[in-house]
Every structure is written in structure tokens, then in C-alpha cells.
Image 1: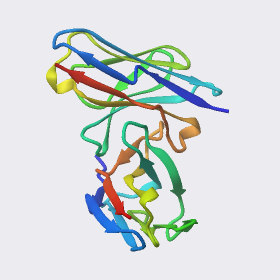
Image 2: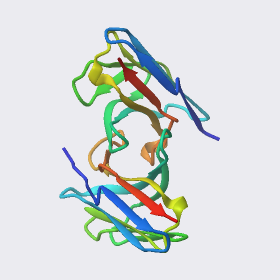
Image 3: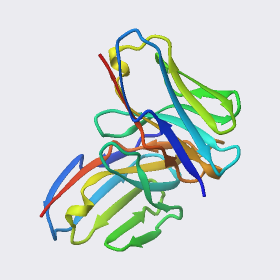
Length: 111
Length: 113
């Protein structure tokens, strides 16, 4: 069966510090991978998507970057966090462009 | 850019009442999905509708896709406290090779016992 792991679950980071959120998928090959941000429990904003290793597309300009060093690994990063980067970050994969399966999410608070 | 307008944003009802959540767009979607999300967790898929006019039932939940595939509704009959959560609709954009989903802003449903 397919599973998606995302960590950490919660993170409190000072302004200006770096960020690295990791997401891994099991039980599927060459999935489309996504990073979303959700503000205040509302709709999801797509940040990045990847259709293969090393292939990253950004949906919105921002202070964040993404990388896909392995087929089933997707990483969200920042060199220097801003207060506005606080939010709930969700990793997801879509097998064969079907419905999305989400990780448990990371609650990031920048202080 | 395709947009999905979801309404209402908040819904607070008593146990046993019926409710409907709407998802509307001026754009056509390849498919439309409904998700339910608990606080602190990722959304979980409830249903996918693909064909215009399609109706799907999941116990007390009824999902409908508009004939033109631009809108959808979620109807819950005899709501229960366990139905409480955030409901999200998401449309799969036509014309993208990677199955991009556009999400509505969500409906926060609270069912009081």
C-alpha cells in the first residue's frame, strides 16, 4: 500500500533561521509530489510541484524553495525564515494524476 | 488561473439537521474532489466526481457534479457531531500534465449535539 510521511509535525523557528521539511512516499514510483501551505485551517495554496527527480516548478514567488533529490523524497527549504512563513505545510502525492494523498502536515511557527 | 468559490465559509448546526455546501467556478474541471480535514491533520479524500451530472452517495453524504463540470455540491443528511470538520472541494485543472488541483477556501462545519 502507498503511504506518505512528513516531518516534523510541529516546528518553532526564529526569524532568519533556515528551514528543512522532509516528505517521503512509499509504495509508488515516480509520483507527482506537491507542497501546499494552508493558512488558518482554510484552503490550500500550491507552493511547488515535482513530476520527477530534480524537476521542481514553483507556483508562487516566495521565500521558500523545494528539491527532489530522490524519486520518493521531496524537501521544502528556506535559507532565512520570515514571520510570514508561519503556517501549516502539507506534502501530497498524486498517483497517475488522480486524487491527492496528504501527509500529516507540519505546523510551522516563526517567532 | 482557475478559481473555486466555496460557500458557506462557516456552518454551525444542530445534530439531525441537513446542510449543503457549494463549490462554484467559471472554469471547467476534469474532475472535482471533496476532502475532509481534522485539525492538525492532512485532508482525506471523500469522493471524486468526474462526469457532468454525476451523483455519488457515501452513507449520509451526497455529492453532485454540475452538468457543465463547473460546480459541485455536498449535501449531508441528519448531521452528526462526528461530521464536524473542514470540508474542501478541489478541481482538477484541465490542460495541465501534472494533475494540478485548485482548492476552494473550505467550509468549517460544526455539528452540536
